[in-house]
Length: 239
Image 1 (cartoon, rainbow, N blue to C red):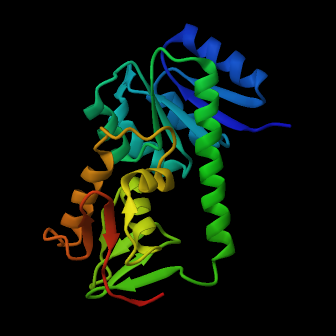
Image 2 (cartoon, rainbow, N blue to C red):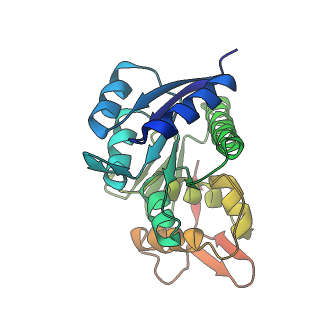
């Protein structure tokens, strides 16, 4: 039984061979692309369930490619990079990547991360499907609207506010548990895959970005709970 279709974007031919052989033996079908142009073309013509993306490609910078891939297919993206810099990882997550794995890595770890991301995505899709008749839009504050079907945040003029996928998921997680303090670790579990690192500041950086977009720099809507994490304290008017 096929587990899913993986689009692997990397110009390292030897790594592509290893990844393809391992994942196909593990039940996946693998489509390979050595550059951005080929990847975008294959994404348009072939079904894909998850994307593995190297940051260094001959015709494009991986970071700039993330939103292009997102525009063509709403599938999870795992960045596969030789860069271990924390800032690079945070930027990738902010740009919309779902996970980040550093080269060199064991094939078992890659397979485990793929399974975790796809499991989380399937769970989220099922939840949206089950709740389709309710809670599609959550109205709060001064006319803000969180549209859960379109993955958008709309202001009082019905203008879409530019949120990354990660920011949307984080705001949604907080809003679904109003007036309840959620730890950074719990928020990480709800919106990310992999193991939580107490030194990872991705959650804090995303909260700061969300606050700015909500004009909530003073932290009255999303409150900081010292020693714990964050809590949504905004006035939810309708759901």
